Image (tube, rainbow, N blue to C red; front, side, top):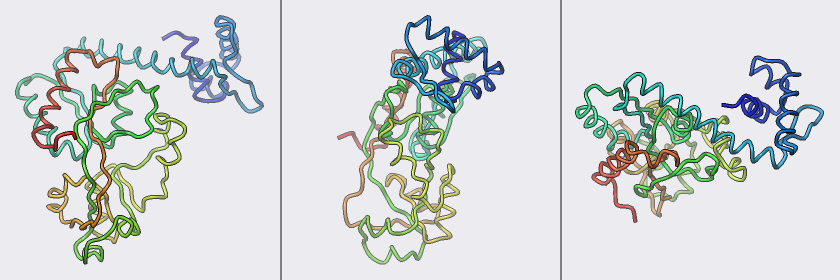
Length: 303
């Protein structure tokens, strides 16, 4: 990628020329000179210089948003060339939430492995924000997960819906909530556990208006990227874990109980995320089709 654009991206992300120079292993005067050169070349101001750093102008914001796309395309191109060089054209690199792995992705991967015995297979398991991180870095081709509310258009991600699912609430055996049907408000009065903890580094994926609601660490008494760890915590406490109702049998098999809810629960859309620029790739298109077929066999139809 162009040196001036690389340095501009570093300054925009650091908010400080000195910090950017340190990250780039160069000097502050070099970066300052190059940023002035870039502004002269473009004929517009990209930064507002302040006492403790810099802020992007409207032009700088536009260049930064498009620079993210250019950087991703460049990095993904290099990754694609490396994979081609190492003869991994038939490899599979996908992501999935824990539920979708259990319900149908596991079987899809098994079928693919038998059809391509020499292929290298990489599966990222985790919540949708971790998978999005992997998608944007080029580590995976696509992933299956919940639709992300407030996702920024600048990510360049495309969402292909598969179905809508209701939510279930699960607690330890003998929990007070099991005595009778409960409202969502009654359930949410208890401490909450999540297997999709918010991570501050993922704020960049969101439109500014949605960041506060999406990154409230005070909502949960326990959070872990491991579903097994979350279930262990719930089994030993009065906490409640909210998870897709489709996983009820599996969660009950692991020792928890399902709370009976006397009102409709939130409906979430589940689907496939991929990069818009790769949606026309023949291999990716075939993989999307295979996932749609596998999902249709076990998930309720999309209303």
